[in-house]
Image 1 (tube, rainbow, N blue to C red):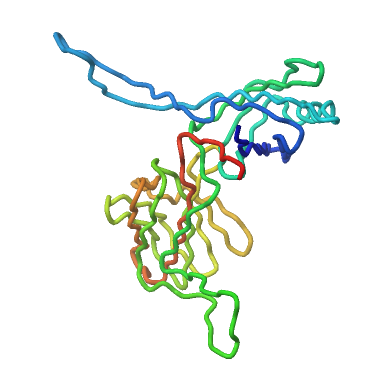
Image 2 (image 1 turned 180 degrees about the vertical axis):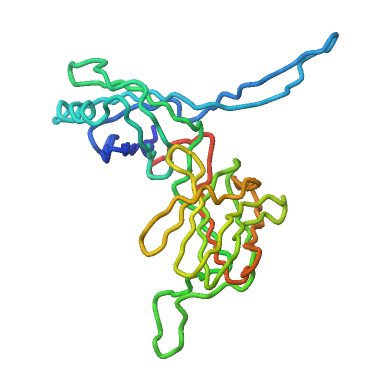
Length: 290
């Protein structure tokens, strides 16, 4: 019977980090890790055979975690879980060091059994039914791409980075689902109303301000999946969500090709944009240990 990777890490927003799995003396079961229910809205006309699917939607998912604290320090492990996972806990769940998702604790740990060792049962609600790949995808438009490599021959000229000269980039999403993204905007001069445009779809996201050297604008999602915009200058952060153009509709990157262009009302050539995102998968299978 093959053994599969099972490292599970719970990191709460309060700062606790809990490692769970065989290597930590706490084997567990987590269910489900795949299988997403799709809610269908159907209609049927008079004398119609079958149904017409009018709408499809997906909701969050509840995951049950049962932990067997069977190591010599099982009581201490169980006590730590009870201490660090009180009600109103939220955080991030990392699975086999490869995937992650956000969670809210919906049922605090309780002792399913105490002999011969503590067994704890708890429930997590994950607002998104998907898992994010922990390896981020990053694309640079009009910025510097690292080119420094080891080993180095110092007898010859070498470059630490190369400035991309074209104002667009294909931000390929290798996943099968549309994903939110983070866009970081910088400039070498005054850029009026900087914008990221999808050349294929015509969708864009635009900030109604003048971006100057030394400023950094970040368009991102909060841990509660709300769209946010902040500007950082001299170490000071400012919420500038009110400067987001209300017609902005580039909120996700579709699977496959996303031809993105850095543009502006003026100073377009001075605008540098970095786009970063985590691909999503709807289900995962634990990897077999070699």
